[in-house]
Length: 213
Image 1 (cartoon, rainbow, N blue to C red):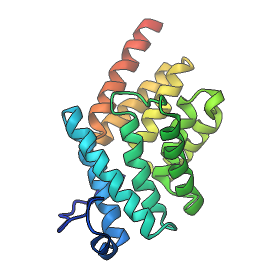
Image 2 (cartoon, rainbow, N blue to C red):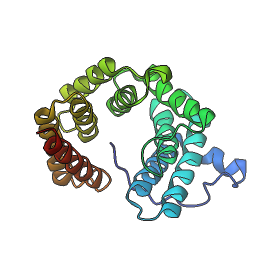
Image 3 (tube, helix red, strand yellow):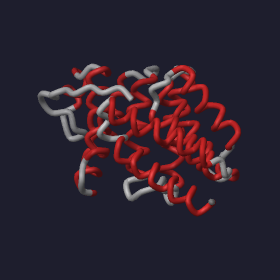
């Protein structure tokens, strides 16, 4: 995932006068939204995480309002909406309206940029984890994630999602190999938002493999 750290000068919240918002470039708002999404992922307490994602959502909404044809704007909004829905752990779909809005932003990203690898990775992950009645499709999800790895061999998220899917099918050796690679890549790239998750997934898969043997 792209990382951009910016100091946003001036007021950029929804409470700001519209004239100030109009002066913000979509790109600046996109960078700000993605920065908040990243900051929320590494925050240690729930309140801080929620605060970052809510700010990121606001910035993403502003970016989409200014440039609805920007795939990056829609993805930045999706990033924060998605993290808000999984703030207490795995993705929660208790809010159907929230879930539909999140997936709408992801699908719009891919409509505008069909080869957006971060969006394809997220789409593949959803297809694997969602039940069939909610649009889940494991075969299609794995195919998308393998495509992401082909195009972006350094992808951590695609490896983790595939590893969990392989484990569910009883392919523990392949699952462990992918999760180990994901953790090594996350640490090598200093991905502070992905490394803890990769370590957690690897430990989970090792425990599952031990039970299966």
